[in-house]
Image (cartoon, rainbow, N blue to C red; front, side, top):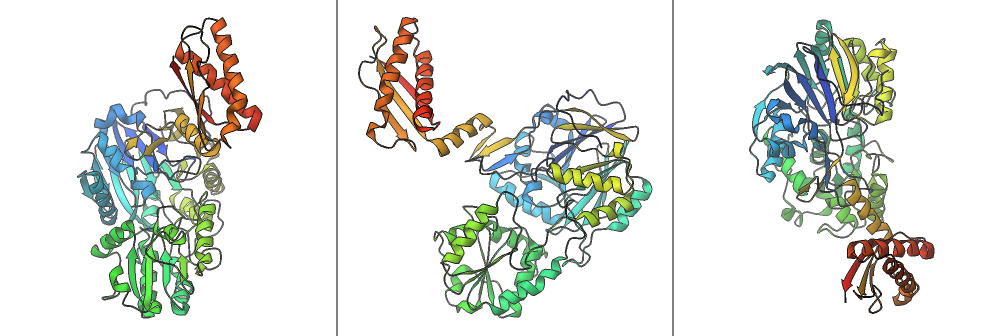
Length: 561
């Protein structure tokens, strides 16, 4: 199994007739999926998503793939193919279209509808190409065939890309639910047909590669969801991803069955479910959905609310309910159903919300105490089936952290793929398919690009470090008035502290330290205010650490007297 090595250099030019594959996101992380294919001087992009920040990235809204390596080749991009409508696959598109607005966006009906609603908020009108399973379209030297796959959002597609260098099959996110709610199963007949023709490089979803067996069918959640809506004494508040049409369909059906009305709460939920209903992906019995104003007229046991916030996001409806910061007041007898996964890293935020809701008297039903969630990704059993059906010549696991990619590569080897032809890459690693063999040939820049409010890329690792310091250690501003002739303090310095100081006397011991620092500087003939500020900052930082074991951010200001 070939792994990237830290000493990888910039990749050499692509050999004539070869195919280059570079993931700019989605390898080594769950999110910001984006893969660039290069052949015959043109580029095809599959997916362009965002990654959601962790607690160590304060103030960041989302994280984008790094477009640096393609920025001077934007005109060579023939299309962006989107496999499905989840944020971690479409969220980065507005930022790519800001750099070149007329790149054709190729996707299925629901995916395009979700994307267009998002782009409207950015004031962008995209050039779109609507495709469905079975379609075959050419974009420059790339001949793309689209295959139905089942996932936790309707209308998912895998894409087979035929080029002069061979055929690539990219699964997108998928699982093999044999009883999907929309009766649209992953098309293994097409996978087999492509396998017969010869798949030279197979990019497979690794998210659940460590999970043995098969992913449970979505329909198997029905008893647990139905039981909640049947037995809940008062209101039922369901929280889910705003794009999980299948899960919300089951909630609507169960609510209808038990004579409850349903209201959607939260901007993204109202928007997406409106789109899904208009396009026929969400089937809503007439009279079932009411607006939040009509709820006041209904008795509690007739009410179901569907909202966002299943990941404990601070601004989402459910977190605000838990914090008593929402017009919907959770009370005794209410039932809250968290119909979603715990995304790794979000556990503490989710449990905080569960505790908050429980405190107000709600009964909280979640993945930990009831069967109310199944994954949207293929487990090891399904992946092995795919390898045996497709019989790929080379395999490149995608979409996952290191452990997932490695587990997926091991599965491929167990089905008989030559270990030398299983490529475990990470973001920015260049994989070339030449003469039927895939190998790592170098790397390109692929850092994290942070979006903070309206600013893209302005926030750096250094500024995040400052933010973490501000949040954890506090900040101390030192204002020193220095006599320009002697270099000594003209009067006692002022200290302005936030998140650090205990009382006014805290800083008395540091005044002699500053005096001594200035005296030493004067002896050495240092009078430049910028140099003096650096010396004072270092002296105060050392003192703060010795005296309090704290490392606040020090902001020195020197004023000439």
